[in-house]
Every structure is written in C-alpha cells, then in structure tokens.
Image (cartoon, rainbow, N blue to C red):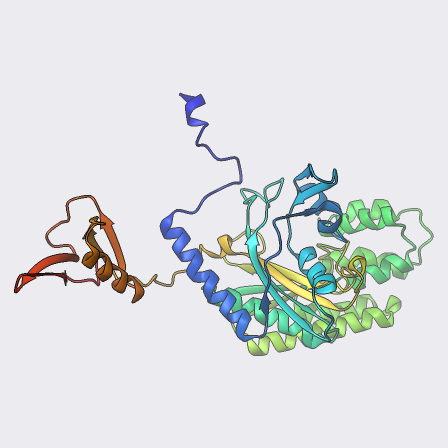
Length: 399
C-alpha cells in the first residue's frame, strides 16, 4: 500500500494549489502587479532555466547550494533551475534592454530550490518583486521600501516590523581590522548568529587597536528601536568612524524617520549585525516581519555591483517576497457571479450561441452531462410559436 501511495505523494517542500487557493493567488497576484504597474514598473518574465554561470553571478555560496543543476544536452554546459530571480532581472537590465538612466522592472514566477527555505519552508516559492536601476540616492531605497510595504498591505498584513541594516558599517570595520576574505566570512557568520564568543576567538591575538576590536564586538548589540540604536552607535563607533560609516548611519536615520512618518503601522528597528546577502549586497539591507511568522515575510536591499558581469554595473536596489507565504494573510473575498448549468448538447447551435454570449459577458456556464437540479440556475428550453428558445432560469448570484 505504501508503494502505491508514493505515486501521488509530493516531495518534501513541494506543494500544489487547489481551486480555492489558486483563485486567491490569482486575485492577489493581479492586485500586486497592478500596484507595480501604476508605480511605473514594467513586468518581465525570465526563463525558468539558464546557464549556471549566469544564474549565480555575484550570488555567493548559498544560492549555489540552492540551485538544482543539470547538463545541457545541446551544449554540454551546466544548466540551472532558477532559485532566485534577482540575477536574472539584473541580466535583463544590463544586456537585454537598451540603456536608459532609470529602469523599473517587476517580476513574478516560481523558483525551484534544492533545499527548503527555512523550517517547513517551500522549495517552490512563487517569487514576486521589483527592482530599481540607476538611482543611487536614498530616494531609490525609499521607493523600493514603500513599494514593499504597500505590497504587504495589499496582502492584508496590518502590523509590520521593518528591520534595517547597512553592510558598509561591518565592511569598514573589517577593512580596518585587515580581515582577509575567509576571516571576514567567519566574522560575518558569528555576527549573524549573535555569537560573540566565536567572534572573540577570531579576533584574539590579532594586532588590532582596542577601538576597532571593541567596535566589532559591539555590533551584535547594536539592534533594536532605531533611535536608541543610532544614538548608541554614535558613541560606540566614535573612535573608528569613517566617512563611509557616517554616510551609512545617516542614510539609515533618514529612512527610519520617513518610513515611520508615512507608515504609522510599521515599527522600524535597526540591526547593524544584519548581514544577510553580504556577498552581493552593497549598502542598505532590510527585511519585513509579520506577527505569527518566525522568519522574514519580505526582504531586499542594494546590490550595485551585480550587473558588472553582464557589462553594466550601476546602482540597483529591490525587494522580493513569496506570494504563497502572503496567502495566509489575504482575506479579501473572491467575487463570484454564480454558475449556470446547461445540457451538453453540442448539436444544438442555438444553445451554443446562447452559451457563447453569456460567457462573453463574464458569466460562468458549465455544459454538463449530469442531470440538472430543478432549482439550479440553468438554461432551459422554452417554446414560443413553434420556435425553440433557450432562457436563463434561476438566481445566478449563487450556484
């Protein structure tokens, strides 16, 4: 019996959407893409499969481990199923479209991951997001964060925690500490895990100034309400502050002030040890959290260098989320005009014409071989002066 059941069992992390769920996904998809459109974002549809060296440009080891790979029978090169659409959008901007000063692109599609995305997570998220190219100023970051928060609002998420970070703070300290690439990765991992003992073990015995060492050790504590964190950061980092770090902290402050002003339902936090995507992020990083969800519901940041491999390095920032994950919050009713039943008589040209006209007006008409209940909305044959007519009987607002 177990062998037979396995024929329709789905792999771990792979799921399907049944009619009610699929209808709600389509309704939410339409609402989100319409929001992108009216904000000036053009929809693109990248391919599901690309050459691996294109899919993994600037993405780091994590995305490589998440990417299912195979050999192309035509070229012998390695193909990959996309695990993230961001590099694809960067390729489209840099290589597939004519250069313009600013470009706004949005996308929606299924990605496939070799590993579940977190505890009990999906291996086939329906990734939706937006990317802004050519805007280096803080206004670009604000535009994308506003777009993300409005997307979550459309999905029905009322209370959002927005977590802000900036990779330049850690990057500047790592440079002052003269950490090589391997040690920088160890330090980044320790900070992500808030593991000061591991970070202390890495730094022990190095020729560091006390100010640099203390600043690195303090990063994991610099998280919480944005005002308090920035005040503390000014004190802790005073002895090691560089112009790059000052600009990063000033940008974080401006974003926090304006987001709280424009989105009263959003609580803004800052975490200077948040270094998710450090391999390719080049500035601001951010994540949104919703009540009852143990991980971020949306994430984004700045990745100005990702287009370089495609021939056009320029400012870039964006965000993405999983449409399936948003579905748990989406409570908007699905409009329904009801179902009209008709006999499956494909030899009756008059019946077929009536069905065609009703469907053209958006009515849902099912031609069935089953007996039609008397009280159901239905097309019924009536006779008038010897002429057969098809009339709609019953209430079409239910069915």
